[in-house]
Length: 272
Image 1 (tube, rainbow, N blue to C red):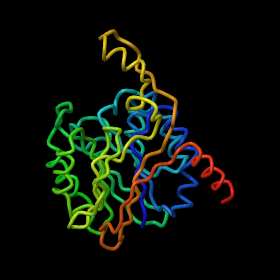
Image 2 (image 1 turned 90 degrees about the vertical axis):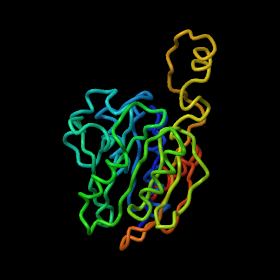
Image 3 (image 1 turned 180 degrees about the vertical axis):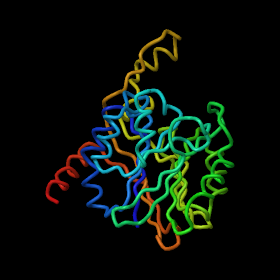
């Protein structure tokens, strides 16, 4: 089977390019399953119920979140009731949301999805390694395809998690830094790995925010509003091919879609 994991969706520009491009991508790439990190979808921080529905309608099968998960308190209802959205599994047990999603692919294959948050240069959280062990122990033995979003800052942290889970999950793909890394690989045990799959949003920016606003505050300490930028919008993602009988990855590649390509993909979806 072939899965697509979309990197941090930032604000309205990020959501719009997903809406425009995804159905065409599903057709062109013959995708069986789509995961998206959407913790920055609401004006750059958080996710609302309306935006959740928008992304699911666009073709996203499962949504992962990170440290901005609760920035929009109204998302609590979605986290409690919907089966295809997860909180970081190393958040407290009482935190709103599920630590594991079990979702069927387009061809009826059971897919397990979990999110973990790193601890290096991040807010204090429980051990992601222990959380991974705890959640993996609950996944039925006949579910072979297991996808992990590791929301972390440090590449060393991400590499450690990749090695820790190698051979136990199908993919460990990093999010959070908004910068795509060129280290995509299949680890020895058959797990697809990449430190960060990048950002889906405006690249003429500082990590999705308006350059002049971030520059002013950085240089002068004067507070400004870090508004979401608008120029050079791209969809960043990674495609992983998985042997669904074993759960082992067989191929991995980066994907970047610009606004022109997104319009072409929208046309392709219309033709389909």
